[in-house]
Length: 212
View 1 (spheres, rainbow, N blue to C red):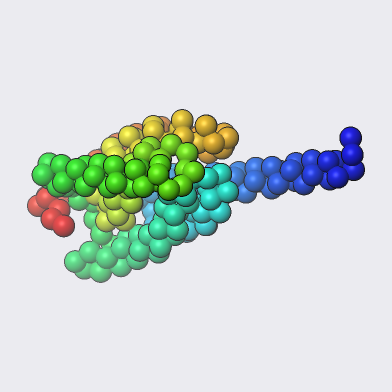
View 2 (tube, rainbow, N blue to C red):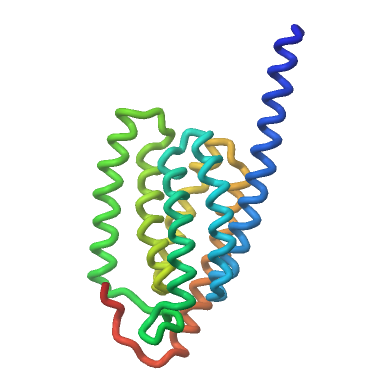
């Protein structure tokens, strides 16, 4: 094998090893984030900040631009979520768990579907994005659901069940196997999170449905 080809091989292997290392770090931080979020601990937002910073770079390099952009948004939301959980709410002592009405959920789902069609079409026509419509749906749905987490909306966990289920084949096809496994694990943690938040919600004094 020519020397130049061997050099290229070593560079490729080094890049793969580096990607695997950073992906592993992001996965561990993401699991810590979700476990802490399921327990309603504000420490989750520190893990979210560092995990999403890593994923911003990784996802860009595997041609998932919407997912990469989503993680930039996640970094900002990590700061917002930390503030809301620590200093939000009427008494500035942290937001409590709330619920959305059926009408609010219908509006959210409709808005996400409209944005998915628009951005999915634009990506398919003007970029080389893989799975443009699935990528778009998981992105827009995650944007909304992350706000729901930051504001402690109980049903956010049900939204994540759908988003995470669709994300698994997306990451498998892109070769991010650890991340795909992470989303399988997420499904179990999400179920635990929903059960935990529902129990905490029922222990709170009665509240009117969250508006806005």
